[in-house]
Image (cartoon, rainbow, N blue to C red; front, top):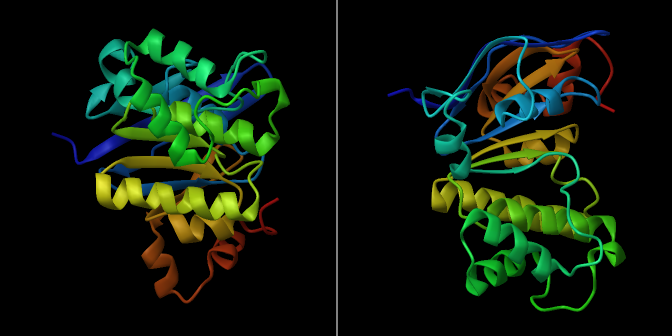
Length: 242
């Protein structure tokens, strides 16, 4: 059995305008948090969409739990929770009503499951406010509740801290670390916020213009007496992340 929960082999996605991801080979180990770092437009979201079967690669392979993703989606994806861009919630329904619909579709209808997910992200159960009245931060919290509601073994989160205030970011960071350290979950999180990933991740991959420039443990970065920001600049040969 593979030691990696996620492994890609020369993963490539080409569009008419050029390559979005080129020969990407990443390795996400069980029970660890992996930070995929890159500027906006670096290929992070495209990579995550391929890992979830939302778009097919032009070339290369995605292995999850040692099995090819494509052809085994029905067995693999129910064990995965994700946030990719903006979740498609119904604007005229409350958080509880929205989660109930998704829980029904997943076959995990249970009021306790929905309430627990909302409690974790700090949203009230049974509240009358509808989704269209939510702030950006509240919408992001609801997306996280949806991602964790079915107790997945693997979380794939694309910029989950977008829209959260500093307190919300700290709470989410603490929650993700708890999931990893105490519950044994494996987490892949993309970000362009280096300061937050430096406090969250065990391992990092740096992607720039669709190419993986480096993959290593965060501890090794710090043995070089670099901050993550300094390390990113040196590896990418440019300015800090934007």
